Amino acid sequence: MTISKLAREIKESPTLKMNEQAGKLRDRGEPVIHLGAGEPKSKVPLDAILSAASKLTTADIRYTPTEGIPSLIKAVIRYTEDFYGKAVGPKNVMISNGAKHAIYNIMVTLLDPQDEVIILAPYWVSYPEIVKMCYGIPVIVTPEDGRFIPNMQDITEAVSSYTKAIIVNSPNNPSGAVYPPEFIAQIVEFCEKKGLYLIMDDIYHKLVFDKKSAVSCYKYARADTENSKLIVVNGVSKMYAMTGFRIGWTVANEKIIAAMINVQAQNMSCPSVVLQEAAAGALMGVQSGVEALRLTLENNRNVMVNELRAFTGVKIIPPDGTFYSLPDFRAYSKDSVALSKMLLEKALVVTVPGKEFGMEGHLRLSYCGSMKEITEGIARIKWALDPESTNEIFIGDRKYRRDWK
Image (tube, rainbow, N blue to C red; front, side):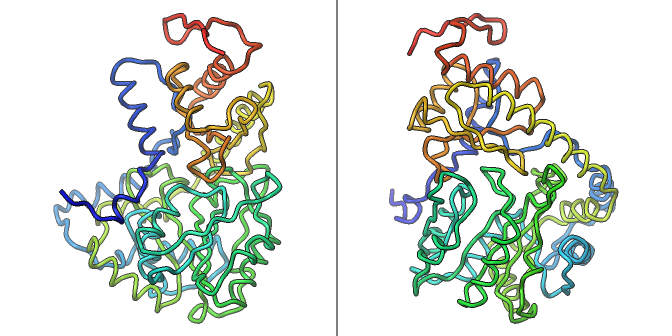
């Protein structure tokens, strides 16, 4: 059996792998706590369910236009105007099977072999792999100050004659950092000056805390829409807790969208009409659920940060958004993969190694679960790592003894 060199080089998704491992433990009846999850616990908006159900009851479930159904495209146009202050038309929008699929379509559309894409660390695990799947070269830029905010000088030094695009994710997965307006202004201006594509992954842009906001990239763009290389990706997965619906979208100039439509037509025809109707229902319906989720996450963030600050040896930069934190555990181990495995084996807590996000020695911890999961999960981690903790702990109905150093 022969497998392509490209396929052999693509890494397994660490987040999906951890989800699978947690599921297996739960199936065995183990009291596992999942602090690696990227799914809010809130219910899907009723408007989304009613819209999907209404379509299903017609029993007329067919292909849609590759770019998406008109009602959803109109909803995205309205959303872009309301929350980005940008007027776009139907030919500037394409619907896809989630934001991840949108990013894949963008890379297929833009990259020739050996083109480089600047990726800012910490980064979402799929960015480098998607670039490699499109025969591009990911170029990682890591802040030198140990913080999570990119530095423009580092970015400019990483740009070469092969650079085609820069991808920016703010609010950021995995750190929760919200990049300041001055950085967004600088990166937009730099990309326009250099003729680079700027891909803004804004999937978390409504989930921001402490009265802050994720600034609109369009605020700083000088080029008009049809001459702009600015590309914005978003979707319903996070802000509406609709992760299983797999609906995202891209907003870009007409030439990029037209090429992306051809790409999508050949790799998956069109997103499900039922799920598109659900997404349109969510976007056009009552929005109170988004704010309720944001408030819950902000409260959960506060609890997790307080728990971690009381933890000897752990350094934590409080996240400004998303539902992730990226604490520094290097006082206990500089090998985040080994540390994550140990915590799963010894304490039955799922975490995601920081190495997968370009931040070795850190662990990504999610606070989108219940308060009990957060407090008990951190307590178990503390028990497993902190020598000042008690030697014994109850996990479920069993007593565990710390018999390692």
